[in-house]
Image (tube, rainbow, N blue to C red; front, top):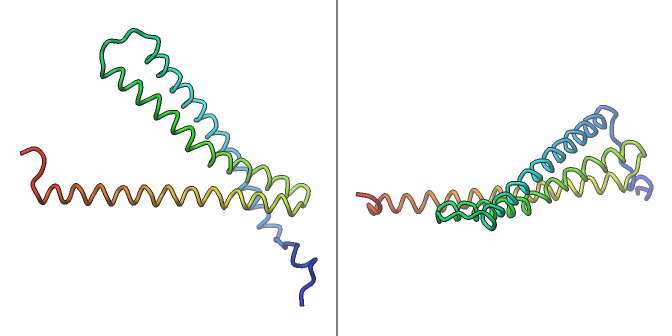
Length: 149
């Protein structure tokens, strides 16, 4: 029977621990780049809202483009914030776990990594599903000779 002490500890070889630390470093850099991308999206959304609200534009196509860009930028920020946050938390907690040999930081970092990959998998399956629906609809439309003649 194992003792409670050996159940709560994790044994990682030095080379594998260095690989985990390297992955954490790259995850933090990727998250920082993602945050900078989000700042650019917020700027794009603000500029589009400014164009929409304060500039006297009569052309409805330009107004619709500005509105779509504003909404798209804001929605993209909402959907992309959490994956970047989870990556950054993975990196920072893994670094803390490496420096202090803290098991709870290791657990938190792996939970954040799991959340990131779960979110990524959900979006991937959603996009694959939308692709299948699109291909099915266009295939049926092609067989029925819908569209331009």
